[in-house]
Structure formats: structure tokens, C-alpha cells
Image 1 (cartoon, rainbow, N blue to C red):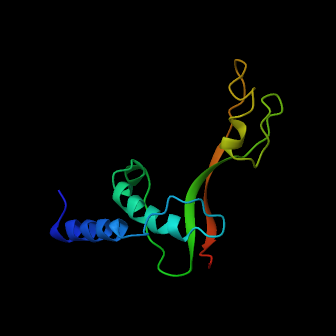
Image 2 (cartoon, one colour):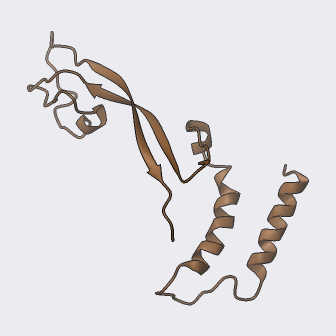
Length: 125
């Protein structure tokens, strides 16, 4: 159930999209301004119902730059028989055809959890 403020916001967005020229069905090759104005209200409506909200934490940037943090699974040792190279991430090795092939009494593939970060910068138009 939407709150009164949420209903009012949706009503205003609908009114903006219903105005003459708000949605253009012409093919534009120069700019995406019309696309942006019609896409953002739709994203706002469906974003809250996506499963991503349950799987990851989404937080808005408070400035023009910010960091994304994640736990990365990194192999600590090399196993040439399995095609695993030390220092590579576990997701890199999933594509290898020998990833799940291991003989009996084989060596354990040690994995280290490492906190990684990436700087994100907001671009300008």
C-alpha cells in the first residue's frame, strides 16, 4: 500500500508523462533527453519490487565519488593439474573445464577472502 506522499508522487509523474510532447515516438539520433525523462519514473516504480533489494545493500551516493566494497574469493596456491593459478579469483576459474576435476587424495584448493574496493565517480553530461 502506498502512502499519501507516494500516491501524490506517482500522480505527478503520470501528469508529467501525459503532457503533450513528453513521450516522443520519433527516432532521435542526437540526444537521449526524451528517453531519460520517460525512463526514470518507470525505474522508480519498479525498482522497489526487484529481488536485488533483498540480495544486496543499495545506498545512494552522498557526493560525486564513492566506493563499492565486496568480498572476493581468491585462490592462495597454484594447482597446475586443476588449471588453477594462485592469486586469481574463484569466479575466473569457474569457466575452466578442469575446475571440478580432482583426483582422490588431491590437495585442497585454499581460498582466501579479501575485502576489495573500487572507486566510483559520477560523470557529467
